Length: 189
Image 1 (tube, rainbow, N blue to C red):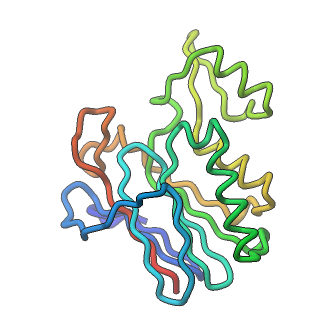
Image 2 (cartoon, rainbow, N blue to C red; image 1 turned 60 degrees about the vertical axis):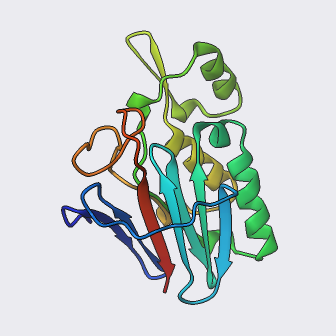
Protein backbone atom coordinates (compact mmCIF):
# COMPACT_ATOMS: atom_id res chain seq x y z
CA UNK A 1 0.00 0.00 0.00
CA UNK A 2 1.24 3.52 -0.76
CA UNK A 3 -0.05 6.86 0.52
CA UNK A 4 1.91 8.92 -2.07
CA UNK A 5 4.57 9.74 0.52
CA UNK A 6 5.25 6.38 2.16
CA UNK A 7 5.14 2.68 1.33
CA UNK A 8 3.45 0.52 3.94
CA UNK A 9 3.33 -3.19 4.69
CA UNK A 10 0.96 -4.52 7.33
CA UNK A 11 0.06 -8.01 8.52
CA UNK A 12 -1.05 -9.68 11.76
CA UNK A 13 2.48 -9.81 13.22
CA UNK A 14 4.11 -6.50 12.27
CA UNK A 15 3.84 -3.33 10.23
CA UNK A 16 6.60 -1.65 8.23
CA UNK A 17 6.77 1.81 6.67
CA UNK A 18 9.30 3.04 4.12
CA UNK A 19 9.36 6.81 4.35
CA UNK A 20 9.33 8.46 0.94
CA UNK A 21 11.88 10.96 -0.32
CA UNK A 22 9.57 13.89 0.41
CA UNK A 23 8.51 12.66 3.88
CA UNK A 24 10.00 13.74 7.17
CA UNK A 25 12.08 10.75 8.17
CA UNK A 26 12.42 9.62 11.76
CA UNK A 27 16.00 9.34 12.96
CA UNK A 28 17.33 5.79 12.85
CA UNK A 29 20.54 4.59 14.41
CA UNK A 30 22.26 2.75 11.61
CA UNK A 31 22.84 -0.90 12.34
CA UNK A 32 26.47 -1.61 13.18
CA UNK A 33 25.83 -5.19 12.09
CA UNK A 34 23.68 -5.69 8.99
CA UNK A 35 21.43 -8.04 11.00
CA UNK A 36 19.49 -7.35 14.19
CA UNK A 37 16.85 -9.22 16.17
CA UNK A 38 14.64 -7.76 18.91
CA UNK A 39 12.10 -9.59 20.99
CA UNK A 40 8.88 -8.41 22.58
CA UNK A 41 5.56 -6.84 21.79
CA UNK A 42 5.94 -3.31 20.47
CA UNK A 43 9.60 -3.84 19.49
CA UNK A 44 10.65 -1.42 16.73
CA UNK A 45 13.57 -1.64 14.30
CA UNK A 46 14.66 0.91 11.71
CA UNK A 47 16.96 0.30 8.77
CA UNK A 48 18.53 2.81 6.40
CA UNK A 49 19.04 1.55 2.87
CA UNK A 50 19.45 3.06 -0.53
CA UNK A 51 19.48 0.25 -3.06
CA UNK A 52 20.03 -2.66 -0.63
CA UNK A 53 17.12 -4.80 0.56
CA UNK A 54 15.53 -3.76 3.85
CA UNK A 55 14.26 -7.10 5.17
CA UNK A 56 12.06 -7.60 8.24
CA UNK A 57 10.73 -10.80 9.74
CA UNK A 58 8.51 -11.70 12.69
CA UNK A 59 7.48 -14.86 14.49
CA UNK A 60 6.43 -15.78 18.02
CA UNK A 61 6.99 -12.31 19.53
CA UNK A 62 10.34 -11.76 17.78
CA UNK A 63 11.06 -9.03 15.22
CA UNK A 64 14.19 -9.09 13.09
CA UNK A 65 15.73 -6.85 10.45
CA UNK A 66 18.53 -7.05 7.94
CA UNK A 67 20.15 -4.73 5.43
CA UNK A 68 21.02 -7.07 2.57
CA UNK A 69 23.63 -6.06 0.05
CA UNK A 70 24.35 -8.00 -3.14
CA UNK A 71 27.39 -9.51 -1.42
CA UNK A 72 25.30 -10.73 1.55
CA UNK A 73 23.09 -12.74 -0.79
CA UNK A 74 25.90 -14.03 -3.00
CA UNK A 75 28.16 -15.22 -0.15
CA UNK A 76 25.07 -16.54 1.68
CA UNK A 77 25.96 -14.62 4.86
CA UNK A 78 22.35 -13.42 5.08
CA UNK A 79 21.13 -17.01 4.95
CA UNK A 80 23.59 -18.04 7.66
CA UNK A 81 22.59 -15.17 9.95
CA UNK A 82 18.90 -15.81 9.39
CA UNK A 83 19.42 -19.49 10.22
CA UNK A 84 21.32 -18.56 13.40
CA UNK A 85 18.50 -16.23 14.54
CA UNK A 86 15.89 -18.87 13.74
CA UNK A 87 17.82 -21.40 15.82
CA UNK A 88 18.66 -19.04 18.71
CA UNK A 89 15.03 -17.94 19.15
CA UNK A 90 13.63 -21.41 18.36
CA UNK A 91 11.40 -20.01 15.61
CA UNK A 92 9.21 -22.35 13.62
CA UNK A 93 10.08 -21.43 10.00
CA UNK A 94 6.53 -22.20 8.87
CA UNK A 95 5.27 -19.34 11.07
CA UNK A 96 7.89 -16.75 10.08
CA UNK A 97 6.56 -13.83 8.01
CA UNK A 98 9.09 -11.89 5.90
CA UNK A 99 8.85 -8.53 4.16
CA UNK A 100 11.47 -7.25 1.71
CA UNK A 101 11.08 -3.52 1.18
CA UNK A 102 11.97 -1.34 -1.81
CA UNK A 103 15.35 -2.07 -3.38
CA UNK A 104 16.97 -2.43 -6.79
CA UNK A 105 15.26 -4.91 -9.05
CA UNK A 106 17.18 -7.23 -11.35
CA UNK A 107 17.20 -4.87 -14.33
CA UNK A 108 19.54 -2.57 -12.38
CA UNK A 109 21.81 -5.27 -10.96
CA UNK A 110 24.35 -6.07 -13.67
CA UNK A 111 26.86 -8.82 -12.88
CA UNK A 112 29.71 -10.61 -14.63
CA UNK A 113 28.99 -13.81 -16.54
CA UNK A 114 31.45 -15.74 -14.37
CA UNK A 115 29.38 -14.90 -11.26
CA UNK A 116 26.20 -15.95 -13.05
CA UNK A 117 27.75 -19.30 -13.94
CA UNK A 118 28.82 -19.87 -10.32
CA UNK A 119 25.38 -18.95 -8.99
CA UNK A 120 23.60 -21.19 -11.48
CA UNK A 121 25.87 -24.06 -10.44
CA UNK A 122 24.88 -23.35 -6.81
CA UNK A 123 21.15 -23.61 -7.60
CA UNK A 124 20.20 -19.96 -8.10
CA UNK A 125 19.08 -20.28 -11.72
CA UNK A 126 15.77 -18.51 -10.96
CA UNK A 127 17.67 -15.39 -9.83
CA UNK A 128 19.96 -15.31 -12.89
CA UNK A 129 18.67 -13.43 -15.91
CA UNK A 130 20.17 -12.53 -19.28
CA UNK A 131 18.81 -10.05 -21.80
CA UNK A 132 20.55 -8.97 -25.00
CA UNK A 133 23.84 -10.46 -23.82
CA UNK A 134 23.77 -8.60 -20.47
CA UNK A 135 23.69 -10.59 -17.22
CA UNK A 136 21.50 -9.51 -14.31
CA UNK A 137 20.97 -10.87 -10.81
CA UNK A 138 17.58 -10.73 -9.10
CA UNK A 139 18.78 -10.35 -5.50
CA UNK A 140 15.28 -10.44 -3.93
CA UNK A 141 14.60 -13.75 -5.70
CA UNK A 142 17.95 -15.09 -4.51
CA UNK A 143 17.05 -14.14 -0.92
CA UNK A 144 13.62 -15.70 -1.42
CA UNK A 145 15.30 -18.96 -2.45
CA UNK A 146 17.46 -18.85 0.68
CA UNK A 147 14.42 -18.27 2.89
CA UNK A 148 12.58 -21.16 1.22
CA UNK A 149 15.61 -23.40 1.77
CA UNK A 150 15.35 -22.56 5.48
CA UNK A 151 11.68 -23.55 5.61
CA UNK A 152 9.88 -20.21 5.33
CA UNK A 153 6.60 -20.77 3.48
CA UNK A 154 6.22 -19.06 0.11
CA UNK A 155 2.95 -17.42 1.14
CA UNK A 156 4.74 -15.81 4.10
CA UNK A 157 7.35 -14.02 1.96
CA UNK A 158 6.34 -10.58 0.68
CA UNK A 159 8.48 -8.57 -1.76
CA UNK A 160 7.84 -4.87 -2.36
CA UNK A 161 6.82 -3.83 -5.86
CA UNK A 162 8.95 -0.68 -5.68
CA UNK A 163 12.36 -0.32 -7.31
CA UNK A 164 14.51 2.38 -5.71
CA UNK A 165 16.03 3.42 -9.05
CA UNK A 166 12.75 3.62 -10.97
CA UNK A 167 10.87 5.78 -8.45
CA UNK A 168 12.86 9.04 -8.22
CA UNK A 169 10.03 11.11 -6.73
CA UNK A 170 9.40 8.53 -4.00
CA UNK A 171 12.71 6.77 -3.21
CA UNK A 172 16.42 7.53 -3.05
CA UNK A 173 18.91 5.49 -5.08
CA UNK A 174 22.71 5.63 -4.94
CA UNK A 175 22.73 4.15 -8.44
CA UNK A 176 20.85 7.24 -9.59
CA UNK A 177 23.35 9.48 -7.77
CA UNK A 178 21.34 10.28 -4.63
CA UNK A 179 23.30 10.77 -1.43
CA UNK A 180 20.39 10.27 0.99
CA UNK A 181 19.03 6.91 2.11
CA UNK A 182 15.55 5.50 2.53
CA UNK A 183 14.32 4.73 6.03
CA UNK A 184 12.12 1.74 6.77
CA UNK A 185 10.79 1.18 10.27
CA UNK A 186 8.96 -1.93 11.43
CA UNK A 187 7.05 -2.51 14.65
CA UNK A 188 5.92 -5.76 16.19
CA UNK A 189 2.23 -5.85 17.06
